[in-house]
Image 1 (spheres, rainbow, N blue to C red):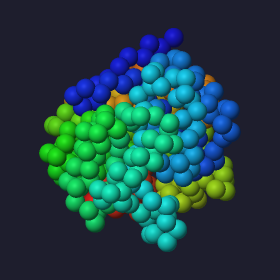
Image 2 (tube, helix red, strand yellow; image 1 turned 180 degrees about the vertical axis):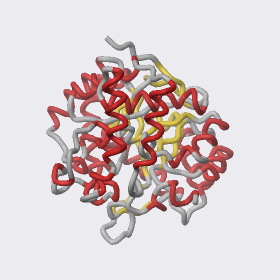
Image 3 (cartoon, helix red, strand yellow; image 1 turned 90 degrees about the vertical axis):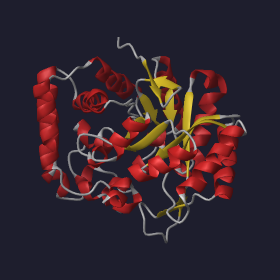
Length: 337
């Protein structure tokens, strides 16, 4: 049985070594029934994963409402993260038809709405989900700091910001965690933002650590994605691109075979190795709809990859085809260049 330890993000936010990304229950990946979702959440916390991540935009608030049901009996066992800032707008030319908002009034309105949906008094970690480039990040973070002063939020986080944006935000209020996509096939963050987080003592929370499911080896072709699966619109999952990205998965599978682990476990173990490589706290938040997959994922904590295995996995970057986002400026990658 894997022992799940703890990691400190920032100066004082202590969480389990692995988190859980509740977006897995949202319609974007096909969704699931509430009974199954709640059973998975209970199992996740039962085995020691206490860091649960959601956002107000997942299912237009339904994800937070689902987690509220779970929290009724287990609030004290959970470190809860949620996010604000993404607005669904079919006319917006951004990721999935969305735009961002980060003005002071909206920060307060969004936080109050999340607290109501979640049925709690305080959010443990509150993220700015995406950058509203029309508003100085200092204004957004100052408003988030007001939430801390009011007792509505304990710690602040940012998602998909650049190194420059992180430094500007951290100067206004301490940032505990940075959440961005980071995995064997999404490594652009290593150039600037990961070193900046290490320099400032900000913890890193990689989302989509399993390459949005690709690194598990369970997505065989484009047609295996459901008709409403948003991954169909992502460049790396486009018909043809998936096949050409097979070299990435081949590297992961080769190491998995050598170690006697699953591809998902190897992908997560690679991320844990980055703690030493970059000198910062790293807590990935893989998501799944199935309890048995949670058990599989935490098994990565028992794996230590050697230098040769890391070299094979690092070489997988050569085989990556396609941007990780439909609109690169929606994530840090486009604004760093």
